[in-house]
Image (tube, rainbow, N blue to C red; front, side, top):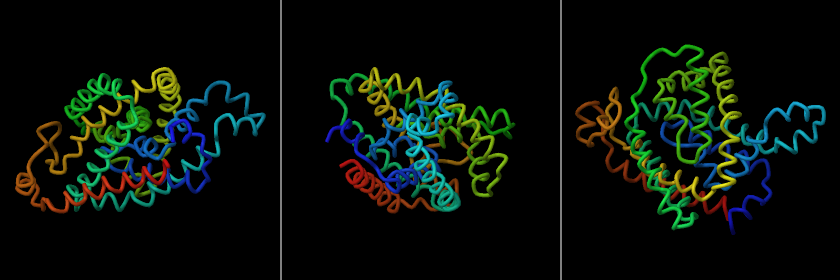
Length: 299
């Protein structure tokens, strides 16, 4: 079944919400993209198209509610948003504990997820286009690790702007919004706000996300409409290059390439366990789980 045919398949709200739960879970982990989950579960083009449909003309449609709902695919977006909210609320505290106690295992699992995502997405691309366009994406993905992590107390304006940038990353099936938040020094603030239900901080984040989506979605939709293979090939290469961000053994308080270390180095510097066997098993489980998920949701 082609991607175009898949995108025309009707989905029930539980099916859409279930995909939203997976996207929400992915966004809780720095380095994993909700956009990747949308892509491998077959709803990515529909998601980008629905978000890009919002604009100045949307205000006039408010007086014709049925037209507004149909034009913006609102049933789809609300079902997906509800699922994402459930995924984030259900897993934020659990993921915070896992990252604190078993960080190498968590990142090992999602390394397997991302590597299998590269295979699933890359195998659907035109090979000649992929061969040319994935290279620049791969280099950009490697370069992403060199971004310094900001460690300052965020102001409201900084949180607003950072949320707008992060949600643009969320919309791409290769870039993690959580990793962008981590790089900008906002990840701890946002994850604590979710865990503690800090409505003020969450409101600022939501406003920034809305602004980012409105500004970015249309440009992405046009690029994918005109150059779909090239755009997705670049993103496939980017995903492969940026998987190094999820190297399981990283030193805390150190950014960039200097943070990467061996299991023994991790144990010596953190006083924790390297969990080497568990990391390998988690990576295999993540890869198998993603492959099964892609098969179940896209066929």
